[in-house]
Image (tube, rainbow over all chains, first blue to last red; front, side, top):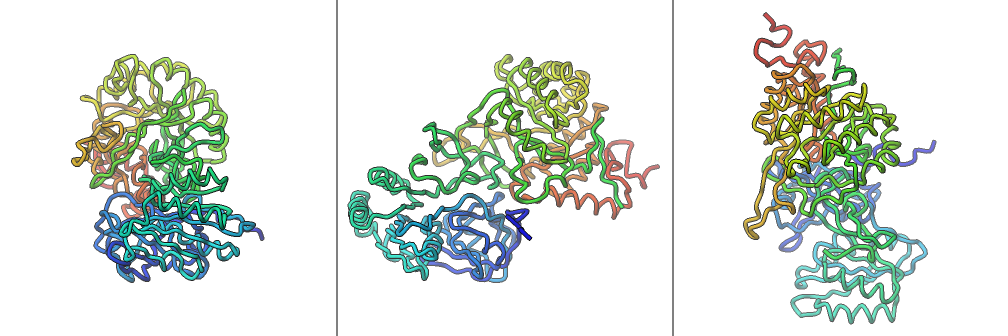
Length: 272
Length: 311
């Protein structure tokens, strides 16, 4: 019997929190018991989370959160930057609490099994979005090189990013100036010349996105970018999360980050 | 066994719960079987392509949201040729929300929708600016509201014509009576109420276009009052909308005089909210010994009551 895609691919489900822990000074990780949802989630997709603490306090609307950990026999994981009402409520959840999730949602990253090597350029919490790509690439035998940009070594989260994927990480920091765009550009130019990747990926920084877009165009390397945007419904119905993207004919059109994205072609996306 | 069957004029719905225009699309089929709804209601269709408003288009408050999306869309031709085939896959009656910038444009578009197979009713969104009246919304005053309604009535034949009223008016009963007299088959009460939020760090409105329409739980008492007033002013059915998130909210609207309800903003918080409202209505009627949900309509109005409480 051919089951095909799930009849209802998006679930609204209250999931049990199995781990809730701070990561460094500003980040937090949540692991949920959601085997069925985790198994059909793909890197680059997201869930819409009802950010209410165990007392029910939190903002009215859900918050979109990219998937940090997913896969068969894996908890569903989120790595969040605690910076507002929503993320504070999520960070206040404890083991055993319930979290209402809607998802998986959106179009994830695309990996071509013929690729030999990809390069990931991530900044801040953008690395959470790109993290599951390392494992997916490893499973296809694709080598992952990553340039991770962070404020300081304390903020890097290299282990949270790469897990056991074997990704080769080059960290750059604000604290020593190595994360400045001209220096990252020099680093990428060297990589593209010596070990040309088949594709590049980025998330988390407008200036790094612009840099990677420019260099990838110059070197003729395809790329993908995961965009963030405030959302209403998360399902494609309210048209509040649009971003300007160039269509195949070169026209600038508004596309929904929740439905057509959040992953877009690197050259099609426009700066924000 | 509770009968949820609902009649809106000549149209019979399997239950009284449907989405509010603008908060719904075929995308929700990813979450549940849309044929469980009493009806489907499209986003407002406009005659021409519209890009929509500048961002941000949505702004959260303590118990609701302000929106100024700007009715982005590809226009009526695209809707009829591309979107309608997708909508026809569903069995639930399809209500097409229509918005237009002039009386003539409303009539032209309504005529085309009336000739389109699969359209069960038109819901005229007359809260949009009337370009012939300095951009004032049709729904603000009885005369332009009636003019738009009458122009559509003349061209849609037997197709049910619902008109969605705005809370942004001084005398909604007068607007409701004028629209009823102009030939509307039902009234949808009400659209969002104009509101504003300001970012105090930048001293700019939080929405890209300034003001926006407020919806959500905090708006419910106002919408309920409007339904109460309109239901006593007209004889045609009223469909209640505004802040409904749970079955108890829906019961209030029915008791205030509505024959059916629309659920909007709540779907953003819980995509399955409409299903919970349907099941909750069934449970409420069963608990109260009410055989048909239609018996709830107007139960709280003066000189009426729940069936078993009747004098």
